[in-house]
Each structure stands twice: as structure tokens, then as C-alpha cells.
Length: 528
Image (cartoon, rainbow, N blue to C red; front, side, top):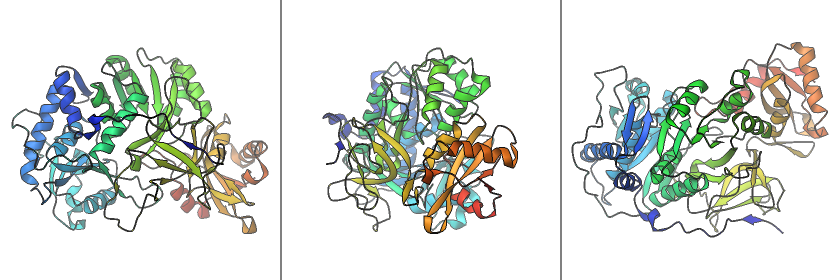
């Protein structure tokens, strides 16, 4: 017996057959004067943003000769939290190009790698990326024409378009194909080299509908994203609904709260590490949000205690979702009605999920821990430049590389990546469960768990701990021993390393286990 969870039948509708940039054109036609985006650089209506996208399309088309199939591109676009990214994203697609969102926080070597692997001929770069581009040119196998997305501190920077309406949108170079590739998005590379994920027009529009419907984003919504990039998932869902987007590039939580109140935010999205601080830091004890009706997180799981504390502090539903680049982006999401703390919710509408055994690949029953597989219309078309990879099985299932379990109702509980779990005394260890147990201790600010060899017993867990105060070796060992008393024998931590802060990826805020494993041999481990 096994469980495969599929939500009720859901008609993705003929609208998903239209091109991605039509999301913006349709919103501008319906409500031209409605505010589309508010950012540090100002406010744009839907009509103005659509005209800006037209200007990008008209300027890009001559720089990107159409191929035999009529396609142009690809075009790199820095996904900086600025309205220029939104206009350039839709404008590149409108020009018939494949858009390649580029995280502006990537280190230079990673930027060069994405540029090389994408085959981009044109790059529209945030000022901080544009300023280092000259040093990357020798690392690229082909020339790339570069422009600054906006001038920033360099008024001499060449900017392709400043948003002033001018040239009309170009005629499509080829008839629209819903299965044609609209975007290539590169994975984060947290557990290995990043890969280019090809997403079709239909997949992107489908996921925009799945996300927007699940989170009840409508024309009267104001969607605040306190994340260091513009996520195409949030952007496309908001534009589909004709909602207003509030971009907050400032990492300070205080600024995001001010922006939410100033502009009537209804939906508040942030990184788990930021929401954890908002839930627990004393300085936010009396915080209120006047108009926000829900708070949600993705990227990595929030501990149930954090969700409960934040919901209590703000007085609104707090929940989380799960996605990956290959699902364009959302695969599971809880919702604002009756969220289940600790879960990332059921599969998005029209898709299916199942859990399979890590060793045999056989489907498992509800409650059993294994690898998550997903199937649905929002999944990618495949990986670019990787004919050696075959991501789907014969029935269309995609193995996510994430470990977790599904309950009887199909709600997903994510634990870790398959690369991060390990065995001790023949039993599976999920580091995230141990981290949650450690972080429940009042003296622990952050915790991360990795494995170290333990002879015939396999690998034993060791914790990196950032504590509220310098505890010293004896008190640190006592703290961990106290946590161990509530764990099963094979889960008990064998050592701890005191750190000022847990190492995290600067691009997505996730715990950098690769860096922690590399640091472990030279670390001063307190025995427990």
C-alpha cells in the first residue's frame, strides 16, 4: 500500500497557453492606472510598466537576431529588487528572447558561470554586478553586450532604456508556442554545481495561477516581498491578479514593517531567518501590522515554535510553502486558512506528490520518511546543456532530492536534502530535526548539524551552535546533554562547536552544510 496525493481536478485553463509577457499586457489593459509596483526608485502603474517592457522589447530585438525557429536570446537580467527587473523580464520575453534571471548576490565566479552556460548575448545588470563585469570578460567563451539596469552611482553607465515610453512593441518573430522556453533559471547550487532549468511559457503561467489562487492574491492585494531579489513566482502571481507589489531591498526588518504599513500590504513574504528574528527578538515584541492578513515563508522550513510565536505576535496566519527551481517554483503550499505548523501544505492544484524509499525507490505509505517525488503541469521542460541528465521517470515523476513525509491528507513535512541525511547505528538521521530540538533551548540562537565518521556505527551528529551568551565548555556540553535526553539514542549529538553565527549561503540564507563539513576537521569540538 502507498499513498499518492493529488488535489481535486483543476483546469489550468486556456489562459496558460498565452505568452508570459501577456500577464503584464492583460493587467495593463484591464487596469492601466492601477499601481503595479512601488520600490525605492518610485511607483509605476500597470500602463507605465507595460510601456517600459515595450521599450525593452524594442531595444533588445535588434541586438538579438532571430534564429531559424524565430527565437531570440537568451538575455541575462539581474533579479534585483527594482522595478527595472520586472520591465526587463517581460520585455525580454516580449522580444522573443529567453530570459535568464541572475541573482545579483552571486559571487563573480558564479556570475561568469551562469553567463557562460546560458549562452546569453546580452546582459542587463544591476549596478553592483555591472561594476565587476569587466573583470569577468576573459572568463567567458563568447562576447556579451552589457548594459546597466539602472545607472546607480554611475551616471555614465549605459542603460538600455530608462522606462520612457517610445518605440512600439516589436511584432513576434515566430508564432507563439506555449511549450517554447520562456526562461532559464539556475538552481542555487547549495548541494552541487548549479544547473540551468528550462521553463516553458505554459509552466510559468500555470505556477502563477497555482500560487496566486492558493494564497488568495487578488486585484486589491498589496504583496510585500522582503527578500533580496525579485522572485518571478511572486511577481508573476501578483501581475496575473493585477495586484500591487512592494519591493523592499533594505535587509532591515524595521524597514519592511514600515513599508508594509505605509502602503497597505496584505501579503508579507520574507526569508525564514528574518521571520525567525521577527518572531523572537525582544525589540519586535510589540509590533503590529495594520493591513497584513497573512505572512508566508519558503526557501527552508520554519520550526513550529517560530510559526506559533510569530502568529501570536502579529495576530495573523503564518505558514510556509515548498518549491524548487525545477517546479517553476512552487510545488506545495499551506494556506491562510487553518495552516498546520511544521507542514508546507498539500500539493499545489493540479499536481501530485509521493514519498519513495531512499534505497529502492518504491512508493511509501503516509507517515513514512523518504524522498519526495512530484508531478504536475508546472514542472520544467528539462535542464539546459545537460543531455546526460534524465530528470523524469517514465510516468513523469521528478525526484526532488528532498527528504520528508506526507500525512494522511497529503500535507508535506520537509526534513532535509538527501545529501544531508546520514545513518547512525543503522538509523536515518535528519539534521533539521536535531536543529529544531537545539533551537528550542532558550540559550540557542542558531544551530546547524553535520555528520562526522563514527567507525562501524556510520556517522555521528555534531552541532555548530551560536548561543545568546558565551557559555564556556562545561555549560555548552550540559546544554547539549540536556537536549540529548529528549532524543532517541541514535540521534544523540556527540559534540558541539561554539560559533558566533552559523554559516549560511549569502544568496539564499540556507545553512551552508558544505562549508560546515569543511570546517569540522579544524574545529574545536566540545565532547558531550
